Image 1 (tube, one colour):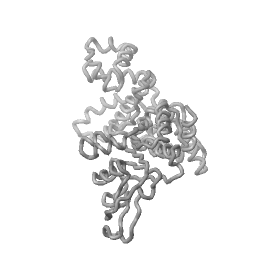
Image 2 (cartoon, one colour):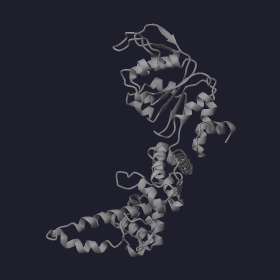
Image 3 (cartoon, helix red, strand yellow):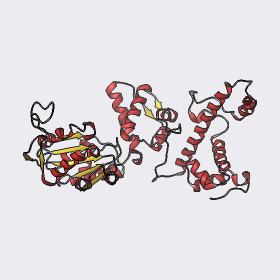
Image 4 (cartoon, one colour):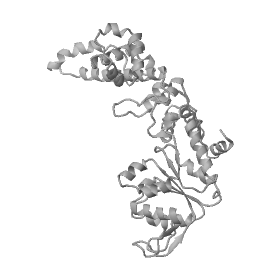
Length: 397
């Protein structure tokens, strides 16, 4: 890490040491002194707003104005007036003339967040500013000049927007002279734990609560979660944990309960595509087993409420015999301690065997269903002797 990158991190309180994050910061520092347009890309909540600030602070315009504009938050009918200003009487409600952001920030930097939300007519005006430095106020025929650096950001694939006719191709190439890609949180590895500790400490200091800590299993669960809301989502969840579990060590179970469920009803714990290991795949298998147990618990509750006169009730005893684990998920013990029998290995073996049976021995389909690699499935089959137990019907594809 060079000195300039370190200075940028310290100045803007950026937490993390992942290679992708450091590369993005270094790219921003290097382009800062050169007056080029920059496009910052990345998912919502990933921290794109830090990079235009770095570019402004480390560039030649650092002593001039910096204005940030959220293009998605301004109604289409007033966006031109906000950006370029208007003359008195140019539209209903324009009782006085008004300067726009491009006039106010003359000599400085303007950050256009969610630039893909700009209407096509406004995109044409923006293109003119980029090409000539000229613009017209709404309701005026007098051309004005501005000397401004534009940094734009978006979580939209602009090339796809261009293909759909929602974004001008010439504007895209003008804005993307230099592109800085901000990494998603789930691709930043150990940065997730560093950020969680920072957010927990900040919350404790601000609200004078006892600090929380994170168990090793909770930290592993954090690094496996997808974090679709990125850093913003992590901060919200850590603050909830810090509030309701003040002074405690956050367990794996508490962490999983705090994570929102996906459309399948389970937490989105996944392996990073760049870091697949035996422990990671074992964690994924355990998540599948945990989800299956929850479904069985729900099934038992439904069976308990069946009418004895119902024809389906005759199968109740048989179903109850299949549901042997106690207690339910609502117990206060850790997830790992909920079931005394069967063991985790037994549950894992049963999950693999069940997937093979459901797919008539097709290993490729079973591996896809378990969300593990075929190599791991082969290892599990060998480890648990399933080639012998399940018969000779297993096929590779």
